[in-house]
Length: 173
Length: 172
Image (cartoon, rainbow over all chains, first blue to last red; front, side, top):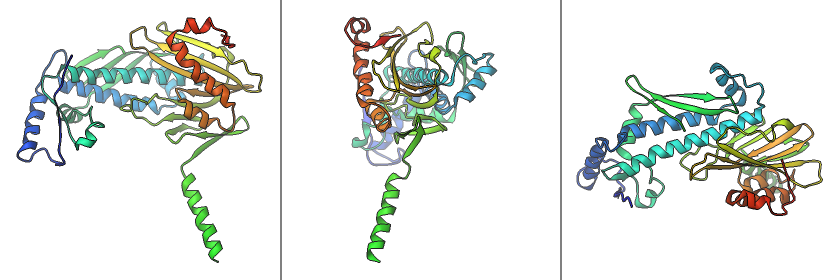
């Protein structure tokens, strides 16, 4: 059974003060350099943030805009009514949510350094999935996301492409 | 004057308490949209985006038209859909869809309740029982709505076993 050391932060808002909070700073720095297993922790956080960003975009798309998007990928969706398209959007966003969760769990299980939960002990339960170091780093280096759909029988996500100027990663949810 | 002031204050407080409450008029009825849903376009509401909330289900309420040919449409090879028509004799027909997506040990399990009258439909996709009952309080039969949710865990557990019972539904 995996075990992860979790440090619960105190009431101090800055992690750059001396004493106990400087220990958190050291751990955050170490966690950023932790290159465990298949993907390093910063990349896992970048993938998760990019997935969440695309999920949020799809969660507010109208059926008409979804049709336009699929048309640009070469699909004629005239045979599907708006209710079906709405269903496809909902199901595929839920699948992306599973993918985002896999990025988080993979990072959580594979890390060799402790995770930091910032906030008061009472609030730590709600912040249990916030990873201080890699997530902060990931925010400064967002990945692009491109989703390719397959509408040959219903509409589902075929592949998700994450990219920046030097890397492309492809996932099938 | 005092009575008038009290009345005015009461009206203001009442207005404040209902401010932000959404409703939609469809099928000659007023539907009460749960407060955690946002309007995407007129007639389409989706649950507020909260992916870190384990209860978040990308639920949606859609007031739309009805195409009988699409009731039993499946989406992909990795999806299993069971569609049941409720045995009620009312002007509104009720269709329950139970969807299992993915053949892994942790599949996606979602449900949709479709209320149909003539060529119009109200789709309740991924809503909870409480949300569905609140939405349809004025407009649909709560017993039928509840039955849709009571059947869901039975179908998830063992669909074949459920279908072998005398459930009374028409299996489409």
